[in-house]
Image 1 (cartoon, rainbow, N blue to C red):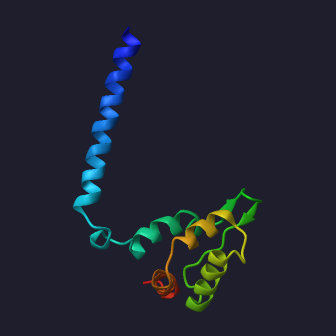
Image 2: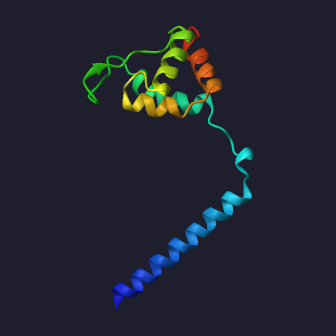
Image 3: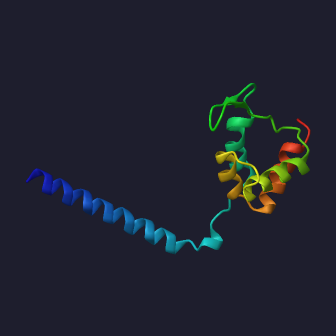
Length: 116
């Protein structure tokens, strides 16, 4: 009996939560939602590319390159190659797939700029 009550309560809570999420989606048209910024992506990039001497173990052990100070054209070309599947690192392919050309350009400008 206790399980039935628990399941009913969890079901009601889930339905209530989904209703709120659906209402929020309808309240904010997708064109009005904020787009990811360079700062959002920077937080993701710095997690691997900003750690001196960092090595990754997936899919194989290798050194993660520092991208700060890299040529912007190289960064854009690398991101496009990951997005097109021409480079094979799974994490970078997923990240690059989420970027549009403008975001790639802004990231390249950000990381290609001399350190301040």
